[in-house]
Length: 170
Image (cartoon, rainbow, N blue to C red; front, top):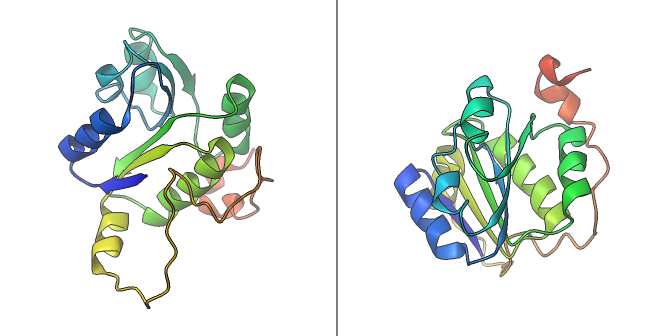
């Protein structure tokens, strides 16, 4: 199941309903751990964030924290070296910004880790979803990833990543 929300309270409620005891969670955009605290005591959490504020705060929690940019292939590879599958993928990359980036991150990470459930917090994606009308074609995914993507493992690095921002270039 894929849950989409904008309000952080709804996002956290969705995660409370999706996360089970002992689940493995990948949290992208954990910032200082406000959402992480909801399940870090009962689950294995791998949390990723690039903000300087996250380092000290995340060290106070019992989680595996990676300081890194989730758009970078190396960061995806680092998480993949720890686990190859997760139960829940939680994505909160600023809430209201850059729905195209959030969707790309969702697609790459979810197709790599094949979660049962995904929760995404992003206003742009939610606005698009609520404004769109289908053409009658029935494409439905019952998992936390798009089932039409059937490859396994880390997808090849997307050349488009170079276009996101010059700061991502090494």
